[in-house]
Length: 417
Ligand SMILES: Cc1ncc(COP(=O)(O)O)c(C=O)c1O
Image 1 (cartoon, rainbow, N blue to C red):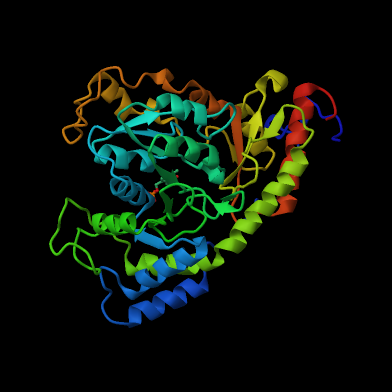
Image 2: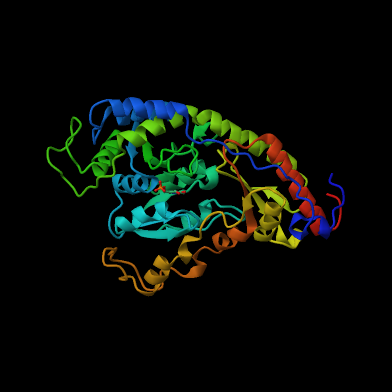
C-alpha cells in the first residue's frame, strides 16, 4: 500500500520525483562485435552475395529458432516485402494487417500493388483481434499479417485455424518480437513465414537488417531469389532471372554484427522478461491499471512493458498518466504505435485511388480508407501506456515504476492504494 499522496507531491507539480536515479542504460554494441568486424575486414574484399558471414548467420538463425530455412535481408521492411511476394501476394490482392504498426508492415503490400485492409485490435490492446480479422476477409484476400507489437503475441493458434480453413497465407511481423513465445513456440513460427527487423531500435541491432524464417523450402527459395535479383546462386535456381526481383540482400558487415548480437540475445530477452515480471507484480492491485491482455501461454519479449489505463476509474488517460510518470523519473509513453489509417498516404488514397503513379492495385475504390476504419485501434493510443526498457533495466527499476504509478494513482483517487 502507498501512503496518501496529495497533488503537490506530484513531481509534475514540483514535488520530489518518486525515482530520482537515472534510468539505467549502457552499451548496445560490444567488444566481440569489434573483434568480429576486425577479422572480417582483414580478409578478402567483402562478397556481395552469399558471403561466409551471411551464410553462417543464416545457419545460426535457423538453429536459434529451430527453423529449417532463414533468409537474411537488408531490413525488416524488406523481409516483409520479400515474404509477401514469396507467399504469392499479387496486384489487386487484399492483405489484412494491423492499423497499429510501422510503415515497414505496409510498404511491402503497396510495393506489390496489393491493398492493405486494416482489421481492428482487441479492446485495450495493441494486438489484432481475430474476429475483426475474419470480418475483413473477402474473396480478394490472399494473406493475413499479424503484427506482434511490442513483443506481445497475437493469438496465433486461433488465427492459424481460421487462416487455414480459408487457405490464406500468414506472414507474421515479428520486428518487435524477437524470441517471444506462445505455448512454448517462437512467434514467427506459426504462420507460413515470420519476418524480423534488426534495426537500431530492436532487441538485437545490426545497424540495419532483417531476416525471414520458414519451414517451406520452395517458399524460402522464392524469397531468396526475390531478394537477390533472381540470380542463379544456388542449385535449382532458374538459370536467368525468371521474374522481377530486388536486391535487398544483407551484407557481410551487418551479418557479422547481427551474428554476435544473436548470441547475446537470449540473455537480453531474459532481462526484459525479469523486468516485466517485477513490474506486473508491482502494479497488481493498483486500481485503474492492468497488464495488457495476452493469450494463454504467451511469454512476450517486451519491447515495451505495456499497461492499460482505465480512464473511467482514474479520470485521466494514458497520455496524461505517462506525462505524470515521466516527471516521476520513469520513461514511459502512450501512443506507442502509430495509427496507420490516419497517415497522409491513406488520406490521399481515400480521396483518389490513383494518387500515386507507381501504385496501381486496380480495384481500389474511392472512400476505401475512412478514419474510423478501426475505432479501437484509434482509441488505443490513449488507453495504453508503456514503460520504455532495454536489456539494461532491472527488476529494481520495475518496482520503482510500480511505486511511481502507485503514488500517481493515490493522488488521482485521493486515497491510499
Ligand atoms: C512492427 C514493425 N514492422 C516492420 C518494421 C520495419 O523494419 P525496418 O525498420 O528494419 O525496415 C518495424 C521497424 O521499426 C516495425 O517496428
